[in-house]
Each structure stands twice: as C-alpha cells, then as structure tokens.
Length: 511
Image (cartoon, rainbow, N blue to C red; front, side):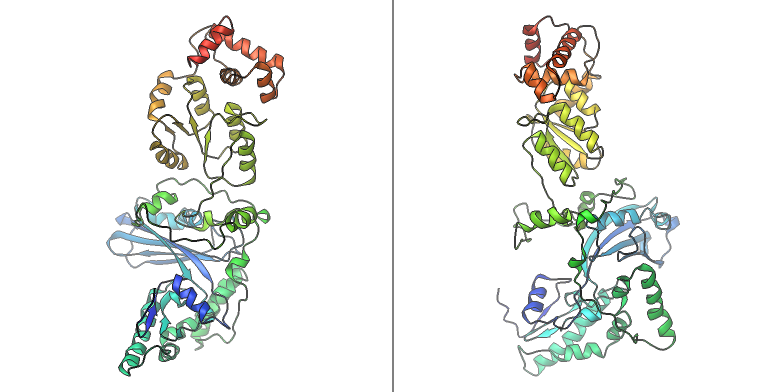
C-alpha cells in the first residue's frame, strides 16, 4: 500500500502495526527508555439502583496481584445505573502462570468491589493493550511526511489510567501543525511545530508529574505507593510540578518474564457465571465479528518459537495473557502412554480423548480414565466413544468425566460439548443420553444381580476387542490368574456358561 498524502497522521492505538514499523525505520525511540505495556480489561454492568452512586470513582492497587507485580483497577459509577469496572496488569510480570483475565475476575470478588456489583448484570466486555511507559519512553513523534498521535506514540497517563484526553489533545496539536504546513504549501517534511506545541501544553506538564510512576513499581508496591504520593500529592502542594529526580528503565517488558520452573502454577477458581465469568462468554459480549473465512491477521515470524521456546520454557504464557483466548496450544497424543506423558509435562485446560487408545504398554480404556482422574482431578474431560456398553458409559460418567460424545453422531455437537465441559457443565450426546438415563445404575439384570466391578468391565471390554487373557494381563500389569478370575467372576454375575455365550454377549454389546 502506498500513501501519497502530503502528511499522514498515524493513530492506530497501542503498538500499532504501522506505528511500530515507523518507529523502527526512523529510529524514533533512539535514546529513550524501552516502552512499557499493559493489558487493560473492562466490563460494563447494569447494577442494582440501590447501590448506584452517580459520579463515584474508585481506584485500586494490590490484591489479587502480589507486591512485585504492577497493576491497578478502576470502578466508575456512570449515568443510568451503569458501572464501568476495569483492571490493568503490566506486561513486565515475572510469573508466566499469571493470567490478567483471571486476576480481574478474582479482583471482583473482593468485598469492597463485590458490594458494587452484586444483584447486577454484566452487559459489556472489552480489552485492549495500553502503552504505559510515559514521558521517558515517548518516541520522537514526527518524521518526514507524518506524525504519531495518541497511544500510537504513548501519551497515556498510567498513574490515572487515562489516555483519551491525551489522544484528543495530541490530535488537536498535530492538526494545527499540519494545517499551518498545508497553508504554507509544504509537504513531506517534518511537522516540527507539533512536538514543540506539546512541550508547551498542559499535557506535557501532566506527564512530567507522572514520569516516574511505572519505574517506582519496579521497586515494589510499598515504595511505589509512598513515592507516588510524594510526587503527585506532596510536591504539587509545595509548588513543584516536575519531580527533581528521574528514574530510568533499561529492561523491556518481555525480558522480565521468568521460566515456568521458577514459579508455582496459579490455581484460579472456576467462574460462577454471576460475578465471575470465562473468556468465551466475555468475548460474546464484546460485539466483535469476523467472517468465517477471514484470513488471520496474526502472523508468526518464526512458527517454531511458540512451541520450542514459549511452551517449553515458559509454559505458553500467550494462552493466558490474551483476554480473548486467541492463542491456544493443542497437544496431540496417539496412545495412552503418550497422553499421560503429555498431561504430565504441560498444563491443560480441557482434555478431549478417545476411550480406546491402544498401541502402548500403558493401559487404555477405563484404566486410563481412572489414572487421569487420580493424577489430574481438576481437569475437565470430554470423552469420545463408539461404545454401546452402558456399563462402561455409566462407569465413565461416575468417575467424574463431564462430557460424553458419540463418535457416530454428528460432529456439530462437539463445539457445544467442549464449551459446556470447559465451563464445568456436563454434556452427553443426544444419541447416548436416553440410553444412559434409561439404564440408570449400571447394575446388571442377568446372573446373580451383582454389579460388575470396574476391573471386570475393563477385562470384558478388552476381550471384546479380540485380546487374549495373557495379552490383557500384560496390558493391565496383572497376572494371568487374576485376569482369568475376573473374567470368571464377570461371567458368573452375567449368568454366562461358556466362552461362546460370553463372546455372543460382547458382540451384541449387551454390557
């Protein structure tokens, strides 16, 4: 794309695609502190009229973030019984397990915040990146034939979590400079009057006062709170608008992240759907729309980096820091052994697995499901199966598997099943639901009426796949005599008198 205007003003917002190329090409950030960024997440609520206080402004810092992590929040009571609540987390945090979205959800549960929202309804959601480096990270804002304004350059006042007023003001200053240049029949040169006008404006004075804000937080929340009070409350009362000291940063945000092995994984509570929510339902309220066949606007310079570096060393932080859940790591395993190894090495939000995964010494089937439930009790599991064995299906559900999808049914069910299970809600395919519910308990009606044990059901299932007793003993790491006994006990309970009846029974899918 070629831009032939006499002057082009860039206002893409934080870290715009074109703006960052311009900054690099013209070295506009030379001699400046590294730019600092944050993730801002916001919700709009319609609250109980009895709790509404028009004009009330609440700013917060601290919990649930630890004292070494930069972040803060706001809560504004607007007109019409509405409340805007937002949370900002600096992208210089150390713990790769941290999730800004989940931290925001936890923040709302604090008694001082909860009291504003209880009884209300969430009606909107949004998120954005912010440039928070302030005056010391502000690049040169003009270059031949163009200029940067607003958050494209980084005029946001991080201490006030406000940038709209700065975007408007810098847009006006730049427009004045461009108007004068056009009136003088100039083109393609630098609009030098724009940065000069900024340095003479009230906005420059405001940003000067907050120039050290982000830097103080690198020294911990206690020091930052104290020094922010000195610089923005005490010094102005003494007539000093520009702090007489300046703190610089030399490390970019991304360099602050530490390997996952140095930190404990953060166990975030499940959303309750009333005060706290998941990403999927949140994005639905953001009113964003995309065509089904729309090309992705996200490109990777090196597609190997996310897996070889991000996932291997930092446990895939992009799957957590994105407030829209755009980035996902999908692990694949073709055997029970590979699946257990994958679950043991990487974090998992949801497991979609087949019931039968032969091909390794590790037992599959119910033994595999049982091991997953024991080792990863909080992991939501969605199981795919072609089995018509009601005993197996009931046992799987009784073990804590939340979702059961019939592989022979329409795969249109799968997205709905995944969403339900991810939210902690059970899901059973329509084709299986009636049979499972009609069967009730998995107690057998033939034989002596005693229920089959999980191990007996597993032995019968493996016999039904064509395995011999010896092969099953190797698969389940049990002796041949133990497997033979479990087979015999199952036949007795089922009232079967020989192998011929047993295999007819298995072939007909009666268990």
